[in-house]
Amino acid sequence: MEVYYSQRFNPEELALLGRAIGTISHGTIIVGRDGRAISRYGKRAMVVGIVSTGSTIMDVRLIPLIALKDFAYRKGLPLAYVYYYGGIRVYVSGIDGEEIKAILDSKSFIEAQPNDIGATVYYPNALDDFLHEIFKHYNFRIEGKALVDAMNTPAVLFFPRMSEHFGFEAELINDMMTSYLPPKPKEVFLHKLSKGDYDFGLRFRPEGVVEFYKDGEELEFGSMWKLFDHMKKNL
Image (cartoon, rainbow, N blue to C red; front, side, top):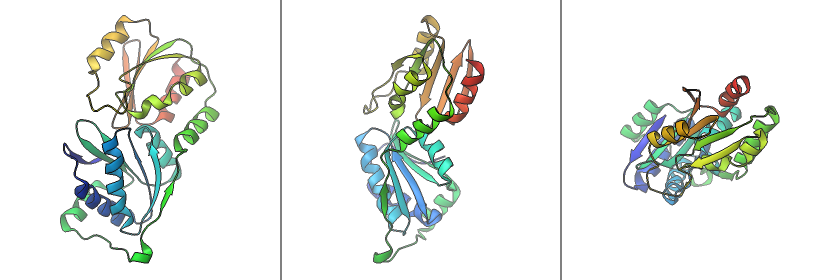
């Protein structure tokens, strides 16, 4: 769920949010971000708050949110993800949003002693490992051509590896993951999909949901595993 939104960059607020997240989870937390510089710095501010409570960070850096959700679920760990979409946002999973708000309101943060400050473990290959698991599990072939709307998110990093593995051609739009400009609206994607020679469409939303389009049907998936389960049965 989304627990933070601001049109302005406020590192102090993000550090306080990190303190609340660390106070609640008080263990290992996976953190990631999208491709904007503001998200990189926002994640750093949040991480300072988290480690101040004694919690440990697994930093996977740049990764699509939908992939991180699956990755964290399989690791059995909570996640916090910083991204930009009309402002800076923080998405968490495995942590109660109401508890975060209560801790922020009361400012009853855990404060670790200097020798108990949390560590940061870098895991830059998380996306590679995620795709390796997907490709090992799913070995079917998809023929045809897909229109892929990456909505200026790190979902562009799925390609071309994903299309090459499953054997389909992918045409990408909104593929500028470092841009602060809003992506072209959904209507542009739907118009192009209906007028072009495409067999199906994928639209990756910033909040970690993928929309699947085929033969006039639209479905939503919050997991890449569930998406490929559906594609295996229906393509």
